[in-house]
Amino acid sequence: PPPPSCVTHAREAMMTRLVVVLLGLGGAAAFVRTLESTRTRQTVARSHGGAFLSAEEKARLEEIAARIATPGKGITACDEGPGTIGSRFEAVGVENTEEHRRVYRQMLFETEGANEHLAAAILDPETIFQKNDEGVLFPEKLKALGISPGCKPHLKVFALPGTSGDTVMQGLDSLNVRLAQYAAGGCEFAKWRSPLEIDVASGRPTRLAVEANMRDLARYALISQAEGLVPIVEPDVSLKGSHDLETALAVNTAIQAELYHAMIEHGVYMEGTILKANMVNPGLSCPVDYSVEDIAEANLQLLRRCMPVAIRGVNYLSGGQSLEDAAARLSAINKAKRPTDPWNLSFSWSAALQFPLFDLCTGQAGVMPLDAMSALYAAELKIASDAARGLYDWPGTDGAHRAPPAAAAAAKEPAMAR
Image (cartoon, rainbow, N blue to C red):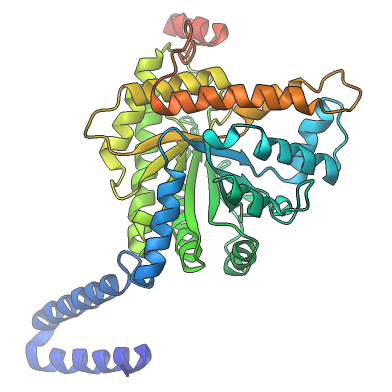
């Protein structure tokens, strides 16, 4: 067996001292550079491309990733914790109970025809261990429907001191233990979200935040694959802000380039991963108008500049966009794809699909009209599926960015007046 690393390093230190005596400082410096280069190549060779995985483990990860990236199918994201979904319930007069959460998620999974448009579902830990009305665990039922069940293993957001508001996601400690539990519960993939915001005035996101979040995503991905789960990595840049589309493209390019570099450096098996990302959009308060085609082109530029072809697909989050805008933009992106753009581009939507369903609960005396909600959900999934194929034709100016009146007026004011 090879000697322990501490012994190896001690031997190298002794050799270096000997070289200094024999070759002088200049020759010793060259020797050290050669030694460090050799050590780096050995380390990379050991970690590159999921070297820790067997051929069978790699094949399984690829098979799951391929199913998630089925053309025309997407992901229903229903991983909101009890508090988050509870606030949505309470806003429309529905009591936040475990049973209400269970029957609501059951409707999302078992709506007739939903599996024709869904490849996967992201579950909150609570939902993994719940059962449907027939007593079947939700992950088992989803698999029977041809929908891959996944989990959300991250914990809470933590504000980075000294960054004027940048954050990191907590949960890497004991991550392997939680993932092993979720895998035993039937999950086939995991999803980790790293939220970031663009604020040009305060210099956010800071370089520290970008590096910290992308390295966390890479380490999470590595641990997920070691536990047999396909990692969905989610850098989530908020729509908040007044930045223009060009700034959004530049920042998102820097973020995703850092992500892929970190994943490769960590030895993640790229073929066994999926990207979930925000669409590149101007900030909500941006004073400049953009067409849906402008936004589509910015998103494709990002992918062409830094997206590895080894990753099969991108599932865009809605991130505060309405269903109408998100569907128009996704369809426009797919319509503008070239034969040289190999990725499956689809959806992983939560609020865009669910908020209209909650609206149906208003004025219902705390009772969820599940049949009406199911019918609307089926229609929404058809729109999303068409958009994932580039077949959805949006009406009017859906998907375009229109500057808020106050922002547009401020932008037109003479500089001296401001």
